[in-house]
Every structure is written in C-alpha cells, then in structure tokens.
Amino acid sequence: MKNDFTDTMELVKLQKEYNAQLNSLLWGTAEIREIKGGKYIYLHKRENGIVRTSYVGEYSDELYSSIQSNNLSAKEIKRKLRYVTKQLKERKYVTNDLTDDVRLNIDFAKRSLADTIYKQAVLEGVAVTFLDTETIIEGGKINGVSADDIQKINNLKHAWQFILDEDVITAKSDYSILCLINKLVEEGFYFNAGKLRSVPVSIGGTHWKPEFPIETVVTEQLNDILAEKNIYERAIDALLFITKKQLFIDGNKRTSVIFANHILISGGAGLIVIPEECVSEYKELLIAYYETDKKEQIKRFLYDKCLTKLNT
Image 1 (cartoon, rainbow, N blue to C red):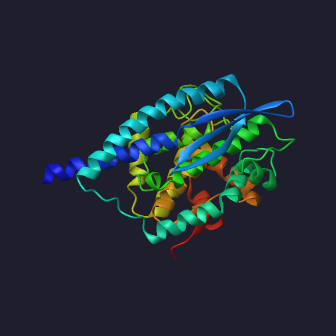
Image 2 (cartoon, helix red, strand yellow):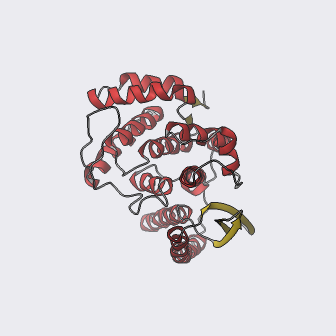
Image 3 (cartoon, rainbow, N blue to C red):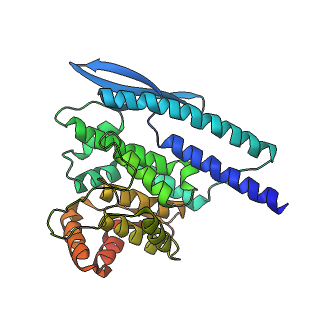
C-alpha cells in the first residue's frame, strides 16, 4: 500500500512537471499577419475545447523557428501527459481543489495583471505607458514602442500566465520553477534563457560584481530560503537572493519578483510588486544591499511599500 501511494505521488509530480513544461513553451499554430508593411506572429491554440488566439511578437526567422521547434516538444510532452493522466485515472486519483484563499489570490493577481506588468516594465526602463501595456497584453498593435519592448511585455505576460496556471501554482516553488520563469521572461532574447549564466556581469551604479553561480550551491542556498517558516520571509529573501546573485544572463529583477509571487500566491498570501513611484528608492537600496550585504532596510521597504496581503 505504501509503495502504491508513493508511485501515485510520483505520477502527480510528473503531471505537474509536464504541465509546467507545456505552459512554459510558446507553441500552437503560427499565423503570420502583414500589417502596414510589418509582419507579426499570432498563435492559435485549442484550450479546453476553445480555440484561443494570442499575439506573440514581430516576425523573425529565429522566433518562427523557435515556435516550430516548440511544437515538436509540446507534442511529445502532451503524449507523456496523456499517459500519466491515464495512469492516475486508473488509480482513481482525484486532484485536490485549490483552497479559497489561493483562488482569491489568483483572481486578485489576474485583475491586477496589467498594472503589475506595467510596474515591472517601469522597473526595467521599458518605454511604455500603462495604456500601451494594456494594449500589448490584449494582443493589440501600437505605434511608437520598439519590437524589443513589446517582446518584453509579452514575455512578462507569458511568465505570469505560467505561474497563475492551477497546475503550476500548486507545484512547489523550487529551482526548476525559477528557471522556467526566467526562460519565459527572456524568451527570444538569449539562447541560454532559463539557464544559470556562464559569463561575468556588471551592475550599473556600483563596482561590486556577483560571483559565477554554481547550480549545486544555488540549489542548496535557495532550498534553505524556501525552508523558512514565514511565507513573507521566504518570498522576500528569495527575491533578494535571485536579484543579488544575478543568477541569469538577464531579467533577474523580473524573474525574482515573479518567483516571489509564486511563493505568495501558492499560499494565498498576497502579491508583491515595486510601485512606480518607488523605483528609484528600490534601486538605491539594492545597491546598498549589494555592497554591504545588509538587507534589513530593503526587506522593510519591500514589506511596507511593495507587499499587498490578502489573508489578514
């Protein structure tokens, strides 16, 4: 009986991993639309019996080829997913429903999505207005915004959709989820998106430089943070750890905020995002934290000015 239970839990874990992998990919039937002399890619995908269309970005051979490659990967993942689902059905396994707190948190995050993505874009210096951000998220076309900035907004959208998926939000916040988030955040910009960087980086405003990340060390340090009992401590410490270590070639601030929110939302505990009017203060506090390793002040800032609690 014990072995049967263990095997079932392994199947559940596989099911979540396959769903997470599938949701991390840009896949579907690609359509190239020509609009006012430009070429843009849209994806058509059937979800729960409904065909949905989403705007991906300005056409490039690399992006189009990436989608075609992802389609092959998605086909194989779906094959594995069908097998695991069939095995669970034969075992009469029933997925536990999300708690009311978590559902409420997911709904709150979805309602706040455009504002959240806009604030993350401001933090990264992306030249968009809130209305631009809303339009891009909804799949509209706008003028005066670079293709790269549109791609960054869409990547943020995909990363947030990924963590708000019910199969992903119930998965454990861990190193694999972190890497998948960065892969989505940097999709189309770097070949090694989602992998620990292997090149040195420098940070504006300081001579301090982070050391090269080593996977075994990073995993151990992250696990120590994720073992903390207080969910707010876990989320904020993980955010600061990812940002300071500069684990990835780019997108570390965006990745760290989304990962911290995976922790919070999975516990129905709220949402964390850097307000537009606090960006300068946050960056100054980050520099001080990088150079001194003292994080009391920046933790208080994140807790007091950036965190919205839902369960108090």
